[in-house]
Image (cartoon, rainbow over all chains, first blue to last red; front, side, top):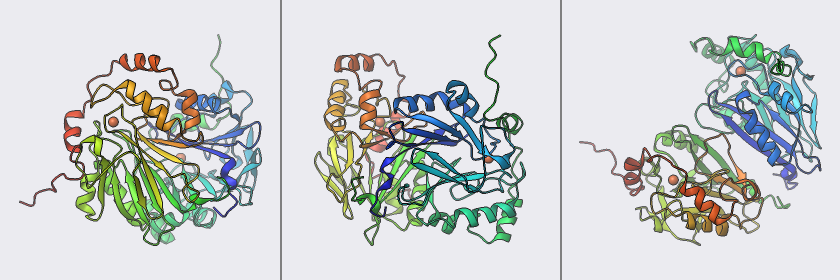
Length: 251
Length: 251
Ligand SMILES: [Fe+2]
Ligand SMILES: [Fe+2]
């Protein structure tokens, strides 16, 4: 906080889906009479919970966004569009996935007077982006970054599927995330240990992988010996049409 | 926020323990050179995670506190005292449990210039308290209340064991929690649906039990048909000496 307390108009909620250990984020500009809201990384199984909360809080959901094409769960954006036809799906153009809005590095996604800036952070997948709150005085302070799987608390997403590259991930995180102000709050798409948030300062110092030099990082990533992602063959095709699954047939 | 941005000196972290779905809260005054910190409702299984985070953040843990004698998990306060002998355990006097500091309604627990106010909120157990941040201009804004099991998001703890009373719980929540400013952030000891926080305004409107009139509430609580708490016979005796379990014997 730098005296302006601009964040007083941001309503923010972190939500957790247990089976895939996924975090969904709800942000709304409650200073705007319409209370426009965005959901980042909703999960299909928890759509009813999320939409009920949005209704209780009197928000108007305008965007259902993904940080990337997830391989471990089915996104909620398709289901949300069938239940709330006014909501638009958002994903990066680089992901190759179908959505109402395909965003690129440098784009700003407005909800009321607040916005998220799109930063390309490929490496976990070729189309990963990080959504970052703005840096002007009327935007939340400290800044908040929704990192998807590019950075998870003290770790990062795997780089061996979906056009992943450890070289590229290292470059993305160092140039687009670690370069943010050190008090920036980092919110990942997943956590498996019960942490909810971290900061740039903490990850620069303590991330077990990304705080190392690039060659060490690449060696770590090459030797993770992870098993084949269980959900990938179901989740990726579904998520490639994240905003456009056919609604359940009436026939 | 009311312009003062007093909360900039509060470091706050919410932590989750999966098996018992328990939230642990870390608060520190990082405006104080010693960075004094408190942990609310630590769990035995996650003590190493919590103490490692405290170390990385450069904090000095002064109090390991419980909102009540938990029946569903063993508190981490005993283990913390063996690992960090400077930390003191805290619980309410009304709980009858042994601790370094037995607190009562109206007490203030200082860490640096910040403090938590103790509010007696019996009903789930006879000794439940809610810890609330202060209301002076140098304390965090909006206020934050750590409600234990007196209020959980859209629900509340059971009232059929440990000196519980639905009549008393209703009275406690309405007089001590719902009377706080409507933007007060409420942080419960448990959540089973992936919610992380709520507000007084939301619970007054949407709590499925406590937003009803007292007689309806008592009827709901009498008809929950819950099974015998699985951990109660292990957890309660351990938690009654929450700060004083014998350290592992060396012999
Ligand atoms: Fe992923
Ligand atoms: Fe309890």
